[in-house]
Length: 415
Image (cartoon, rainbow, N blue to C red; front, top):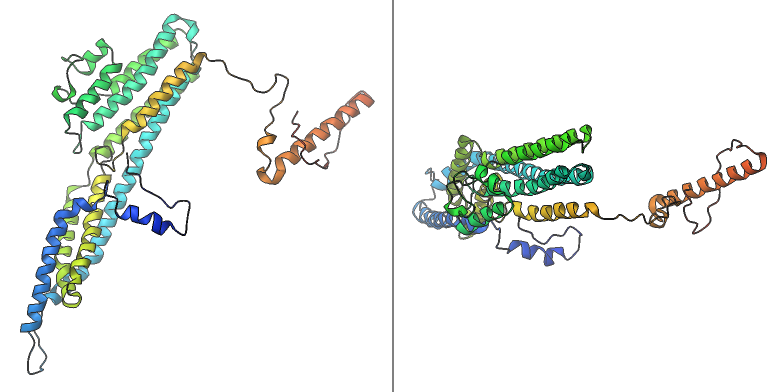
C-alpha cells in the first residue's frame, strides 16, 4: 500500500508544527535513503570545489593590481550550468509528471477491476434464478469462486513478473498457496501444467499463470446458466460486457507495469542530471564556501530524487513501500463477494408500512433551505383541497396551484 502520512487536509494554524515534522523525518517510503550514493559523490566534489576555489584565490591574485585575464574553472562551470539548469529541470519534471499520470491510471484500472468483479457478483447472485435448475446454482457459485480466483491469479502475476518482481521465497509460496486454496484439481492442471498443488511457488517451474483462462471459465459457466434460461439475455449481455472490461483493465495494468520510459530519454536525463550536479559545486564554491555542501546536497535530493520517484511510479505494482498493494484491495473484495452470496437468501426489511408512502423529510430538515418541506406540505394541502372538492361536487374540479403557509415542524406528507 502507498505509504500513509499525516495530512493537513482539514486545515489548522498548527499543521506546520504538528504535521510537517512527521513528513520531513518519516523514514519508511522516503526517497532520501536511496540517494546516499549520489549524496556521497556530490559532497566529495563539493569539498574538492571548495579547496580549488581557495587555491585559485591564493595563487591567481596579482600583486601589481593589474587585471587578471585568467578564466577560473568556476567561471567555466558557471557558463556551462546556465544552459543545463533549465533543460534538466524541464526533462525531470516532464518525466515525473508522465510517471505520476501512469500511477493514477494504474490505480484507476485496479479500482475499476474491483468494481466490475463486485458488479458481476451482484448480477449473478441477484438476477440469476438459482431455483430454475440445480445446475444453475452450481454454476452461479462457481462464478463467484472464479471471480476471487481470478483476482488472486492477477495478484501473483504482477508480483512474479516485471523488473520489480518479488525475490522472497516466502512471498512466492504464499501467493501460490492462496491460488491453490480456490482452484480445483482439474483447473490446477490447466493453470500449472505438470505440477501438483503441493508444489511451492518458489520451486515451481511456472512463475505465474494466465488470468485470461479464468475469464474463459466464467464465460462457460454463464453459457450454462443461459442454456437453462435462468437469466434474461439483455442482462447476460451486460454481464459479458463487464467481463470484457475486467480483461481490459488487466491488460492496461500490465502495459503500465511492464512498459518503461524509452531508453534514450532515460539515458539523456541521467547524463544531463549527473553533469549538471557535478559542475554545480564548482559554481557555488567561490561565493558560498562551506555552504556549498548544503546547497549541493539540496540540489542532489531535488534532481536525483525526482528521477528516482519517476522510476518508482512508472511500475506501480511491485514491492516498494510506495507501490500499490493489490492484496490490500483484494481482501475487502473477497469479503464483499462472500457477503453478497450469503445474503442472497436473506429477508429484506420494508421499514415503511405497506400502505405508507416514502418519506425522508426527517432527514432533510436543512436541505436546500427547506425547499423539500415547503414542496411536500404544499402538495399535501393541494391534494386535501382536491379531495374536499370531489366530495362536495361529485367530480374533481381543476385547482389552481397556490402557495400555502407551512406549519412549523409539519412532516412531509408526500402521499
